Length: 98
Image 1 (cartoon, rainbow, N blue to C red):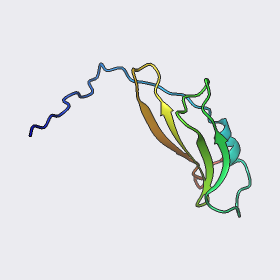
Image 2: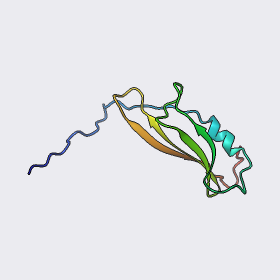
Image 3: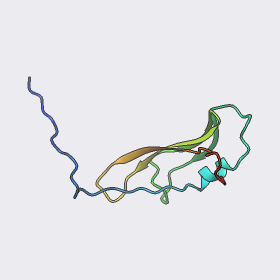
Image 4: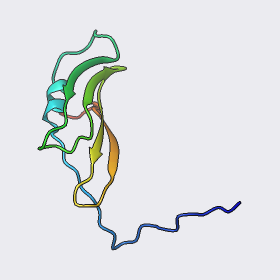
């Protein structure tokens, strides 16, 4: 039995993809008075459109006292690729907030 390994690695001249998404729904959710609602409650669902790079629906949820959004974004300007990211609002003591 033989094994093969992919020797392709990233180099500095490789094209880097980019992606865009609308942060407004997330900020609007942060401004809501959500204390007292159950953890795991879906606040808003954002669907993929031609204006965003979402690969699938993205839910903004109230989780353990924080507004959280998980998303999978399709990269643009490259042959293929996706990036997974999570937005989470964190209050910083002494900050002005929203």
